[in-house]
Structures are given as C-alpha cells and as structure tokens.
Image (cartoon, rainbow, N blue to C red; front, side, top):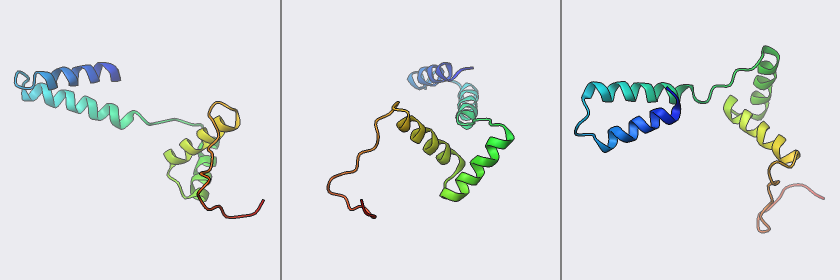
Length: 96
C-alpha cells in the first residue's frame, strides 16, 4: 500500500465513519502508523553513516535534523534554494 492509497482509504473511512467496522478502522490505522513510522528512513553506507553521526554530535542535532541541515546547505550553495537572508533588524555576532 502506498502513501496516497493509504491517505485515500483513511479519508474515505473518515467520510463514512458510521459505516466502517472497528476491525476495518484498526487495519487502516495500523497501516497508516506503519507508513508514518517508516516514511523518514534513509539508509546510508557505513562510512557516510559514521560521518553523519560525527556531524550530528558536533552540531548537537538529531540524525534527521543533521540530514535536513546538510541538504539545505548543499541546495543553497548550489543555487537550488535561495540563501537565507538576515533580517535587517536582527543583531549579528562577529565583525565584517
């Protein structure tokens, strides 16, 4: 079952809640939970995984947050995303 199929089944069940059996709802909810639980997993090779653990530890981020950070930085540096602009009103540490 793919995510769109599961979403369509859940929406349909929500629209027909009084017609759905408890057993059918349990099955759909368990499938949805499984899809949600497995949706964010990314498998990496051992060397990359170790490097990611080191970066996560150094930046005090979770694995997923480190992946998000790395991907965003890469996309900004390669012009796939606009670079974050600082607000004119905010304070900045350091010197130019």
